Amino acid sequence: MFHKNKVVNFSIIMPTYNRAFCIKNAVDSVLEQDYQNFELLIIDDGSSDGTEELILKTYPEEIKNGKIVFARFAHIGVSHARNMGLRLAKNPWIAYMDTDNIMVKGFLRFFAETMIAKKAECYYCKISIPSKGIEIGKKFKYKRLEKSNYIDMGAFVHSKKLYLKYGGFDENLKRFVDWDLVLTYTKHTKPVFIDKALVNYNDSKEYSRISNQEADLENSNIVRRKHGFIK
Image (cartoon, rainbow, N blue to C red; front, top):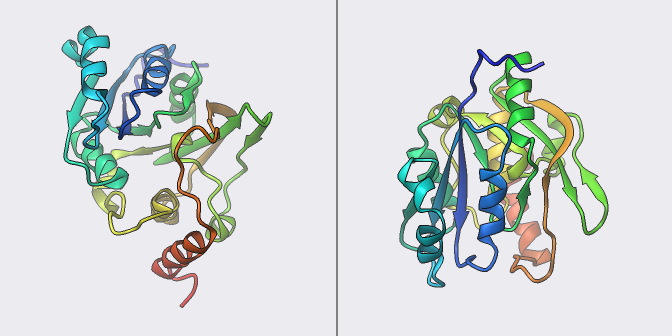
């Protein structure tokens, strides 16, 4: 059971670049959480599609009271945006949300309950892919993580202490930045697995995604060399 006298405060980082067409659903899924001890940091990576105007017009009260923090920077990339979110985060626990996914209503509550029951520096849950009717996620084994990533960034929550100690996202990497960060943090502290799908992942082809098998292999090998898995 959740102990009401114990409070877990989250900073949720949402990077965005030209996602005005879908960002509202993602933002609303955060605001509708049944656990409200959080701030949502929307980090605009130089959008040119009216994202800033949409956010300012739609959520004036949330911005005024600090529930939403909106920050806009020059277009550099998602890793830079997330790192800016990490620098701005005021709370001790960090979560991530992409603009094309949905945070299940009980996401923060389940994580908070688990954090109180099981002390660790990072946690992760399953994700659901509704279009395929499947859930992805499994118990933690670092050796398995060395081969490929099975922890989605949107399902991963960590202490800000880990960021301050080991750094944030590698802005030199073109791909697999999520995998790289998860490898770095979980190498030093074993995460707690929440065996529940708390993120609805959108794999629609309507959304622009990077996909190139040759480039993927090249960049995955960069990550493996960085962590000493291959020479």
